[in-house]
Length: 272
Ligand SMILES: [Zn+2]
Image 1 (cartoon, helix red, strand yellow):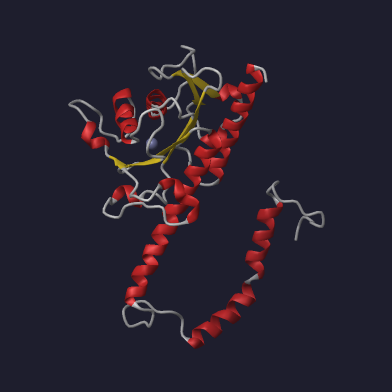
Image 2 (cartoon, protein in one colour):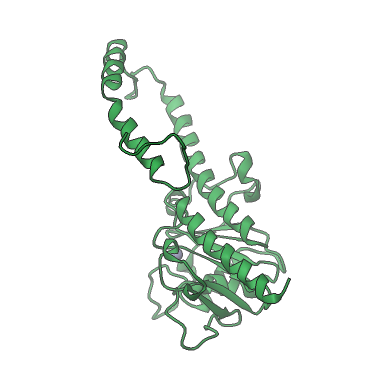
């Protein structure tokens, strides 16, 4: 494959990955994904200053020097202030070719209170390992005069975060949490990094719910300790009510899938 084809395919995947991460709630207007240039390891690529969902073409992407996170094109559009997360990880780990940074709210409880560590709790999150996921605290790296906004906005902060991943050519950690901020995950390729980002988020959600259920179990479900279900009469009444009004959500659900080009139904008619 010609180098130009290799680059085009990588950029196509990067644009898709921006959309996929948005679709799965890993990024909103914030958060970002980068790749190492497929034919020049001294360069990395990520989108400019825009929400990932808005990226649509190679002209939205910026190439940066791994060495210092300066843009290759001095006249490049504005980029992310947190690109140093990506640049310093690519610099430290030659085997890392994709980095994702996220503020996904499912993960945030684990970076707000670090008393409950994030752990792999089901089979899709084996990449998190068997130990608590490490937490990077930028507060330890502030110096006099630094703006303390938690952002990894320079190479010093980026290098400190990269250091938390441990290891040499290949990092020991796949994911590092960032206190009061979010998380960053890495991989040798884009698909694996996207997978890890999505399942880090889902694992956090599952862990939170499972721990909540475990706590509820200790309270009991008999209504004696503040938690209880509907009574038999309430259940019967609510069942009748729900079945009376269920046509309203049904029309909404049909509209949602009809208007999404992902779903096709050859028997579909507008105006159901
Ligand atoms: Zn951030």
